[in-house]
Length: 300
Length: 226
Image (cartoon, rainbow over all chains, first blue to last red):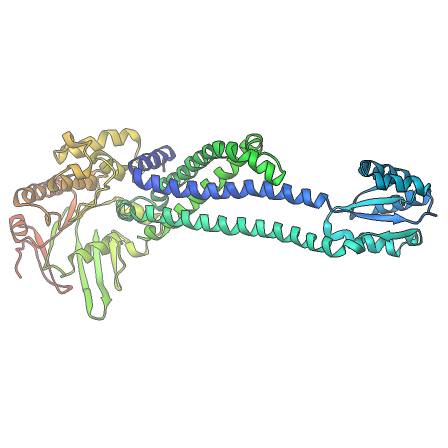
């Protein structure tokens, strides 16, 4: 089999079957566009979710009699835990300072503090977990540890329901995003597969004639695989071109709404990565569809 | 060189295409296979090309049973058999030249041989001036001549012609038959399936007569009698 000849034949057939090729490319562009859109929306979703996650924390408030050293020991012990991302220490004075700045315009509060004379606020540790579902483990650890005697309250137990719900929501959102991506990609692939099958159905007589003239199966099939690969390559290029104005247009609004990255910047900085993924999906899909679709007509 | 050994083809209990057909064809013979429509002529040729499997019996091309030929062997056998069909079966998106060249490409011929042999074959059928026409730009007779060029370009040992004149007027019919005679004279075995009385009677060569799937006559210098 002469490879050059077979590739040339695939390219020529691609041009001469203009309408069929156009239809296959249209459908494949739609599918790749959908897969690309899912990739972009996952970027937004992930950044929005991690932003929400970042805002979840628990505060551990220490009794007045706890010394700074004891609290720092507790901090060190917490940082040893695998689940803990950060544990920042806020001393009584810092807490008061923050409280004052936050309520600087409220004359009543400022005045009350003056009258009180002493600092009513407690020192605390502000803990962030690596995953929101792990706050319970951390709270239990503190409750059972030697430091529990020093601890006045852990606000996890006040916020437990909210944190658990949020953690559940975040997990579900991720799973849903992943599931939707898989389902829609599968649908896109099925549509492409059927379109290519139809395209090859129109060539079934051609396939049988070639076989009867004495062409080997490989010789008959390869031009169709070349055509399938061309559908993928051209569709990936068209899809990338479509995403340029689209992300430029949607980018700023998306960034504002989700508080995430600007999609246009994401498109530019990950251009080759995205293109490569679409190209790979397109080419593999085109070649596999063509291969399966030609098989049944090759039996002669 | 070709041997049918008790070949039967039964599509369904009420439809028997071939029944216990046995005969052999020697090299350089010109054999006409005649019979009414539905007598089994096309099925018989399909059996030799392994386009369809017999229900029972064996079909030999030289020493190989074509229905037991391996995946690699079958294409090689088919390249030694040139086929011509009633409906021409040209590839619609290829020019006349490419249609002929394709048969050589399938046989892995070199570019040099293709550039040399394809014009020769087109010349032989008198279509060199239409080499770059697509099938839909050719008349029925011209299409069949392209198909003949395709069938002979690999210098096959046998040419199978299944009702090659079925869609043609008398003038074109005569030209096609003359071409087949010329091919046979150059040393190629020809098997011609037809129900055209004039063609068969004009040939004065061996005639195998099929009726309802059975061989009812096999005459050395036969006529179409049924």
